[in-house]
Image (cartoon, helix red, strand yellow):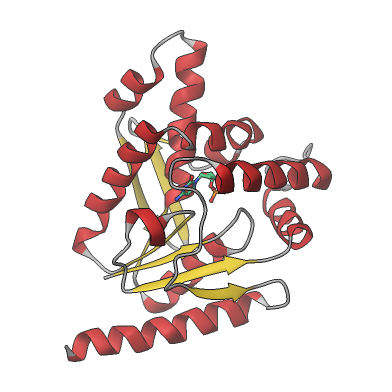
Amino acid sequence: MIVVIDGPAGSGKSSTAKAVAANLQIQFLDSGALYRVATLVYLNSREHNRSFFEQLEESEISFYFKKEKFHAFLNGQDVTEEIRSMDVSDHVSEVASDPKVRAYINDLMRKAVKQDVYIADGRDLGTAVFPDAELKFYMIADLDTRAERRYNEIKGSDPEVTLEEIRKNIAQRDEKDSNRDSDPLKKADDAIEVNTSDMTFEDQVAFISKVIRKELSKQIKK
Ligand code: DC
C-alpha cells in the first residue's frame, strides 16, 4: 500500500510524513531527497566535465528510513547532510525538470515501494508517479510560514543562511516546480487538501495518521 503527500517546498510534508511513518510503523520515502542526490551527481559531472545523464546511470542511489530519519546514499557514501546544502537547493528544480531524470527517479521509487506499506512525499506523486495510490494528501501553507519552517530546520547546519535567502529560494522553486512541462507540482483531483498554516505539527500528524489507520483497517478487511 502507498500513501502520498504532495505539496510545495516547506509545507511540512516531509517532517509530517516521517512522524506519521514512525507513529504507524510504516516506511517513509522522501522523493525530493532522491532528486537532491541526482543534483549532487549533476554538480559533480559539471565539475569533471562529464555527461550528467551517463554519470547518473552509472550511479548507485540507495536509501533507508530509521529512527525518523531518511538516509540517502550515493555510490555507498552517506550524503544525507550534503543534499541539504544551498548549492544543491539552488540547482535541484532545474535538474528535476529534466524528463529523463524524472523517469529515472520514478523507476527507482516504483521498484522500492513494492514490498511494504509506504508513505512518500513529493510534488507529483499523486498525479504522475502513483496515480493509483490508496490515499493522497496535498499539503499547503503560506510562503512566510514555509520559509520560517525551513529556516529553523537548516540554520543549525548552515549558520550563514538568512531567512530572506530561503524565502527567495522557496518562491523560485514554487514557480519552477509548478510551471515545468514535465509532471509539475499539482494537486490530484482525489487528494485530501491539508492547509497547515494554522495547524500545529501534532495536529497534522494526528489527522493524517487517523485517516491512514482507517484506510489500513479497510485494506485488512478486504
Ligand atoms: O521536497 P524537497 O524540497 O527536498 O524537494 C527538492 C526539489 O525536488 C523540489 O524543489 C522539486 C523536486 N521534486 C520534484 O520535482 N518532484 C518530486 N516528487 C519531489 C521533489
